[in-house]
Length: 85
Image (cartoon, rainbow, N blue to C red; front, side, top):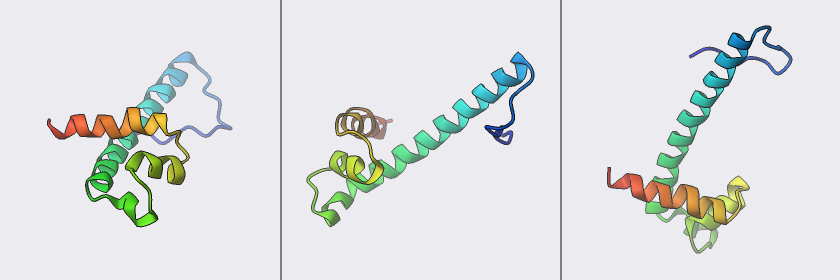
């Protein structure tokens, strides 16, 4: 994996800009996958109960500053569908 381009470093060509965007997207996708695995484990173990919350989506909204609809629809539902794979 290529090192991230600094915000202060402006790519000089379209090819460099293309590569920087594709590399960034790959890192985001990898981090999202890792986070989904962690969320699934956290939810399966009902980690949210430690803070007196009703579900994992509420915990994600509170601790990770995600809206209640986004975690519920994107992360929590998605991780449960991946569980069957």
